[in-house]
Length: 280
Ligand code: SF4
Image (cartoon, rainbow, N blue to C red; front, side, top):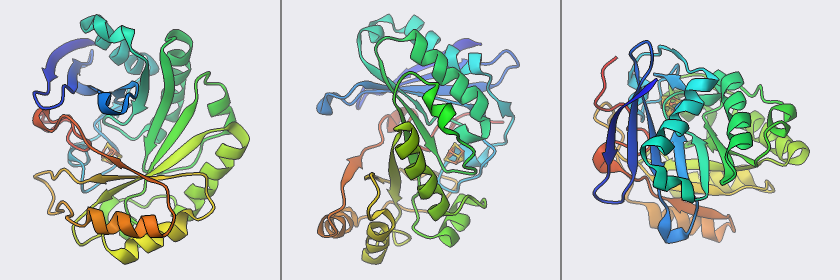
């Protein structure tokens, strides 16, 4: 695998790297900086060429699935990023499986690469696995064999299984079963988790949605990461203008939430925008 192209956002400094695999496919990784929160830098890696899922709000969901990436191809993304931009080596960083592909559909190679990252990078502080949960075949051993903390980001986005089926365009594990599983992994293996919730105009951004969300996570050791939708040309979904009202309801319900802002929109590095200018 080799580096093909490199982009730098003029608005927030986000970096995007395009790599060419040995069989001539393009995959992408990003480096995102959250200087304003003094957080570690975030290296977002891909786990598949294309994606087996077809989420309606994600560009990759409209591309065809080609294959899983091997563990060494996942590891190579980070190695090539540091080789190209050695100044990044001085920072603490997190690795996030949130590039193209659904990590839990390539679980063996994702966790194998996570073990390797944990063993090889002293400044790595955490591994994040972002998933829509097409399965819940994760064992405590998967987690306990990784030396760094593992954090799951559950891409929930809708509070009912029916709405999830409509917009993820794939039958997924029911919400209650995923939350049970994450809670179990938290108790047995010490994993932390949060729920990602993108606000879509008139679809999931009303007070009743916020109230349903409060009920869903009642008593769970988690928080909600709320983000605004960055529209893609393939979809009719729109950005919500109800952020303040929605989060006020969460505040009244005593729910812990954080705002998350997608970065690198000018270089197609924002969440759901990877591979925007690539055909396959
Ligand atoms: S959101 Fe994730 S799982 Fe869904 S199509 Fe995009 S890359 Fe695949």
